[in-house]
Image 1 (cartoon, helix red, strand yellow):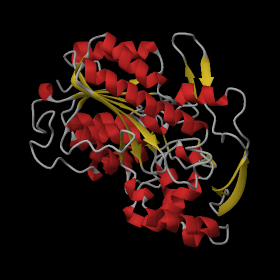
Image 2: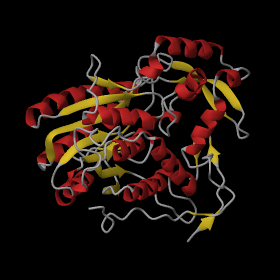
Image 3: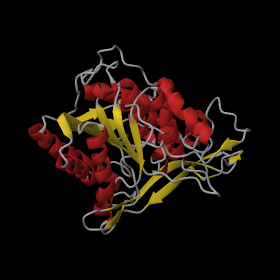
Length: 418
């Protein structure tokens, strides 16, 4: 058993190692923060105290981080699901720890086991047909051939099309011109700096490449694959997680290459919704979530500054992902009616986009400089949130103690709550 004391080593917002105990505690804290079902008959799918075999079966694609992790934990606790999570994480080596998602997945498996939930967690390429076949096999053999829900939460730099073998790469670029924006960085001592960054416009097939990775093509392929295997239950419901955000970040995000991919995702939802209604009496929606500090969001120019300022305005009113996803599960399972905007999207971001909040954030954005940002943004919170992505700065963890890093991946072949 490899045990060592781990200290954070990072390059900007990217950390080279992850802390297993910190990741475990983070998952436990999310589980504790998730609201329990309101009553034993809260879910329209099945009562929360129903036998395991009667619980809804769900698949979460992208289950180890960010909103996908929140969807998995909230699904287990709030909606009483069982089922499958799919993610892509790296194992520990002699030189490096595993990725944070590896340790979060191990902790999620422990929580599911303790709660008596049959949860299978698979590590591999969610874009591949081999993974889709593995999931369909599990649904057939382990979960009675019935899948009730699919949550799609994938952010990736590349995708290989299983049919053509072509590999596409996503980019973060504005469309139509250069974008200049301010962003937040920290030096090696943790001192904040507000910098202006310039991002050149999309060129060539940048938009098409990004849409091929981050749009709705793979989500639709999952539905095609599972429908072809005949495992979609009557009333099957699927949601893809998305983000719109503020006008302050729109040029690089919603109006940029990633925004084009999100628009494709929403168009795919409308197509799938019509199809599922016709074939299984089901639904397909996109869920627009509010801002959060995630490994994906920290890579987007301007988002770090915006999120820190937003927290400065909202404080504890900034709704964490676990609460947002609990609310989504309530809508998907019928605890409360499915509330959609004019574009057919579930909106979990209303706390962020009210006029008064956006006006306050915009005022701070205009005056934020290296000298003033500490008074305008919640930098202590933001720094801690970034570190917690990798298992550091988690309250209750002794970071002076050696910790085992070679945590095994959960073994679903022998460990079942069936």
